[in-house]
Image (cartoon, rainbow, N blue to C red):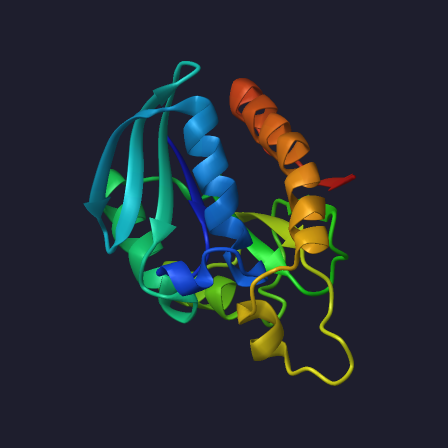
Length: 185
């Protein structure tokens, strides 16, 4: 069984912000794969079923970004998902908008959602797909930047990256293996 969790914040005020890139990828992946059962569980939105012969859970933790680990841990423990079959999708300030990077391990890089997951799972050995959102302008603090809705041009660049991200995730599911990769538009 694979768990793919996309990080973000619940509520319409956050829906098109850079910090919700993970939620947006999960929404698009859910539309593409349509794995089956939709439910509220583990303090999150869950899509559960079988896709391309693989049991799959898509999770959007509704615990707010900084407590994402609570939702992920509850799901992992309930379904007894091995750490090597977990993929976390998050935004990344250190990658330019229009780029993404898949890593099979690494640090949380200061990302509070990834840090929460590492603390709750007791490891940093989960896979992560980091979606570039770029750095804020010089005069803007990070929290303002990540929680401010994207402009039309920024959102268009994210949407241009999305099909390649989805294709790559599906290919990794098909071969049951996620490997280090960089993607860009």
